Length: 181
Image (cartoon, rainbow, N blue to C red; front, side, top):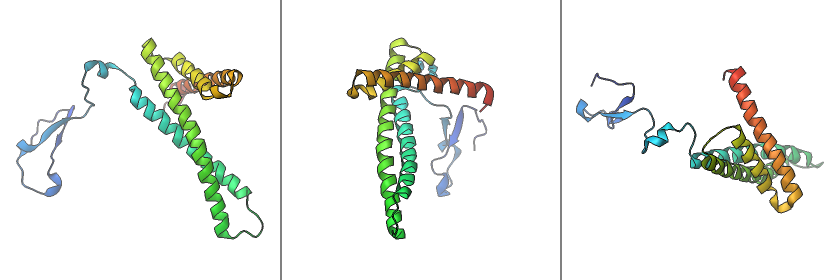
């Protein structure tokens, strides 16, 4: 085996699981850090818009589904009637948790999708990523999410979205500073 090992590469042997006697010249040095097509991509310290979109939409959908399923379990248990068999009780819990989890997951996932799109748009327009970017994205998300219910509802939801996004960013900064996670 080759002994000149670099920190930025790792040796790759495509046939190691087959127990074949293969010479060392068939080992490949693969990079351990991400590869970028353009050098400008490697200088950025944030996710791309596609990664951002996938992360926020997926995380929000998963969180909403879990929270909705928990709320559905509680409402399913509350819907028990006297004389229900165990099979019927389990069916009520599963139906209720599935329905509530699915609907809440879709709603919160759509909000995450809107937030990611607005945040990526603001970052592309202003070419900076700071606290105000998240606040503006939260404001826009709340307004767009409730726009169909009228101007007043959109304004209130936008204000709440901006406050929640600002609170999350501030909480993240406090955790970074004091919790050392």
